[in-house]
Amino acid sequence: MQTSDRTTARRWPVVLGTLLPILLIGTVTVGAWLFNHGHGPVARHDDPGTDAGKARDSIQSALEGSVGAITPQVAHSDGWYYVVRDPDHWDGEPTPTSTVDRMWSVQTRVDRSKYEALADQLARYWTAHGYTVGKFRNYIGTDTDPFPTDERQISATSPDGVFLTLEMDTSRVSLQASMSGVHFAGTEVYGMNPSQPGQRLDDYWHQLNVVPPTTDDPYWSHH
Image (cartoon, rainbow, N blue to C red; front, side, top):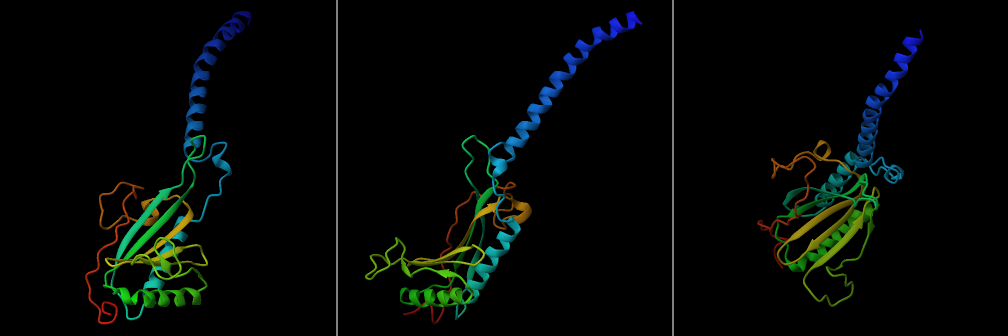
């Protein structure tokens, strides 16, 4: 028995010397994964944000409702989602939230004389659906006449947090929808951009380009 005990006692340092590095490496690996996936000491206290699928649907609904409220109807091109993850925490931990944008370009040419009529139609629709509506004003923020430039805009926020901006100038008209504080997600929620079918997963870093108008309308396109 004494021989057996001495043999066992000699083996323990060998076993511990083998297991401890493995346990240490495992602990470090798990800790690094948790840190990089928003479960570190700072990020674990974050609000997870609005569900990405809910945000996607809210943005889609806001755009469809707004464009559908324009009379006579206008043609538009459908831009894709633009997702920007919020900045990392001070200690480098990633945040769980993002800002999601989507822009639709009006393909019907809108004459400058019809800017206010277009803004009025959307303002009435937004007000009727519980949006908080801002002033019709110059693009750079002036809300009194005379406007120093041709650009005009009007913005509103939907009851579920979608911020919409109608922007109008001599070469283009666009409607942009944005929502902040959205749980970060990628193509599994927003799908693949039809115009960029080869894009990488979660790769939404592209410009929100306004497509030039191409369609003439008897009412909107003329003074």
